[in-house]
Image 1 (tube, rainbow, N blue to C red):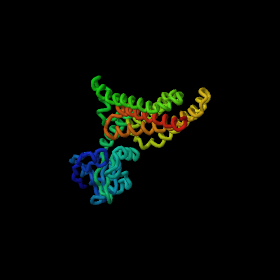
Image 2: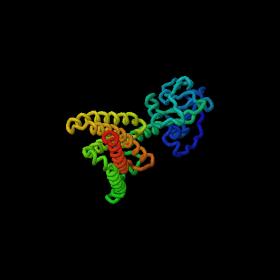
Image 3: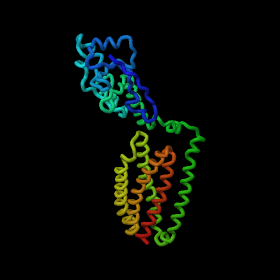
Image 4: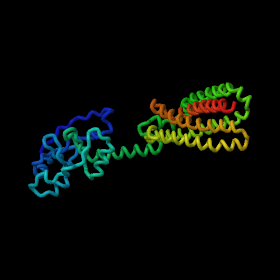
Length: 330
């Protein structure tokens, strides 16, 4: 019985988390013509990374796997090719580690063969490494469900840092919000003539801004929560944008008759309805784009995306509302 020379595995960033990183060539290897007695004789007096499974190979090409249980149950003189599994579960070197581990579990195998091109045997993932992968993936899943990424030290420290660091992380974004409020005041001042012509327009500024912010805040909370559990923005962008547009349409449809009924001004009611729809749709887009951008830049979206999204959306909502009112009312 032959024994493969162990091949060193370079644990670089690209190899971590894939099947090849966990495979070991320091395992028992037999030829298909070897008898079961010869296999056991080859096991005695040698140390392996794992001896739960014997790889049956023709040169360096994997033909099958034989578990120790099968070998022990075989009669004397039987060849290993007669008791091996001719169709064992195998994975490619680049297979994700979690998928590889579950492949072994589904086939009830104590080891999993890693096979390269042309069936070249690269090694076995032994039972203790399969268990380690499953436990690691379980811990990461539980950490994500709790709102923390196991690999993100900043996410954990953000919850426990002192008051000074909390102020340092939050105050700059709030100062951006203050600047945005001043810009919003300038925008409102630019429409002074329209307000003098129809003061009723001013009554609905807080409502339009608030509802757009509320929809954006809901979307932002959903996106940040999704990012914390590993869900990319691309998976929800269409449905969330459609949801924001439908919400805006429903709010616009509700506001139109109410404004007409209470204030009796159809043109202002139309302006409010159109502005609500447009502001709601844009708020959803802003609330998705900013957390995604912060996440890509490696910045915690919990600190900056909320205040910045509020500033951007308020400016857009005010601009949209007064732009629509200018066209429809004045």
